[in-house]
Image (tube, rainbow, N blue to C red; front, side, top):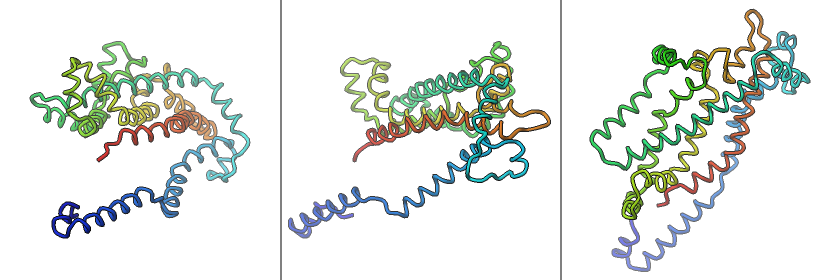
Length: 304
């Protein structure tokens, strides 16, 4: 696109002022333009498709075993057995409240540790200069291509030797930092944190850790909020590793919901009521934190 200065040199100041006014009107119009009904229609369809599995679980959880056996696809109107099924879940032998507290502890501790260590590593990879920095970052990213299931056996052997089997620490420690988190924070801090701020902090006498704590960590707040949300959801819904290392003695919520299945008979109304209960905390997290996450991203956006 031709610049205003070039237009002034070739066509004069009048043409340059006219071009500047047109560009200003175009930028203001595009910034204030509201999305049309097509955009809202597409978003509504996506929302309905995304929310239907949760509502379907609620429909089955509000029914009973006989009705589900006769009609696996229920009507869109919930039945009247939901609170009865919830009472059965809470009074069953799966230790629901213990499993809920275990999931909350694992999700919160893992989210905080992943955000802190990933931000620390991302700051090092993006703003510090040391030998082998790029190669080490490529190696960290390459570990994302390795399936998690390949490391289950050696990881279980290590946890068994440490005496951590059946304890929450066996689920928390292997998830304290992730390759995705390191890559996410490295990419964000690469563009969001200018070197001038770091140099100014060093001139003022800040140490390396103090510069990270007072400069890098506040600058990374929007990306850290999104990473915390992703990590919380992933930890809350994780099933495979907690099922192996914890078992039924000290379960997290997904493992406890799986224990609702009997050996020869599956009461889907009971199971889906438990699934609905385990989903409610995630919905509350999104409802309470969604607006703050969006506002944090907009405040942390880099303006040109």
